[in-house]
Length: 242
Image (cartoon, rainbow, N blue to C red):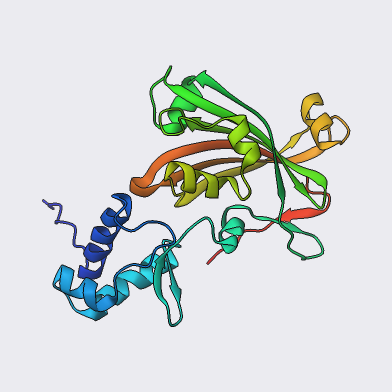
């Protein structure tokens, strides 16, 4: 009769776990340099090689960023390069352009069954719902409906969204101390309803790409559920597999 053997975790993975705890606790903030490999090795009583391997994996996970001659920094949504990690829409001509985010609505509600399941909260808990439009070269391309836990995003208003210069994730990081780590998406084709068609300036029934996303912060905690409708006449959705 077979017995389950205890799970073995390599030493560098254990160090990675301890460093993740430090990130989650806010010991090292987004954009801030972390201690050197030598300092971390002394702190955790391991070799620099073990620390280096942990940092390498965290850099591959987009949690840390190495900067030649400057050190290793906590990844930040304020870095312009971070925008296209979560926004995978690319123009057909290949020329990357930064979108303009146009907040349309922001209101408070109570979580229904679906929102509570997606966000890991209880039905009836407060949530904030944001509708916004993304424009590329002045043309409407994406309309998003974003659901957020109300307790985390207290103080988020339409005025705050309208006054922010930068990506919505950089706003979440700067104002609410929340960093998005990873996202899970499901994609399907849909037809534009009347309201969506008006906002995107396309005929009703126009084929669109529906992208539903749940985004997670440290500790694999879901903190955003969004449903986006993408017009792909002049863009395609790029996904890199490795």
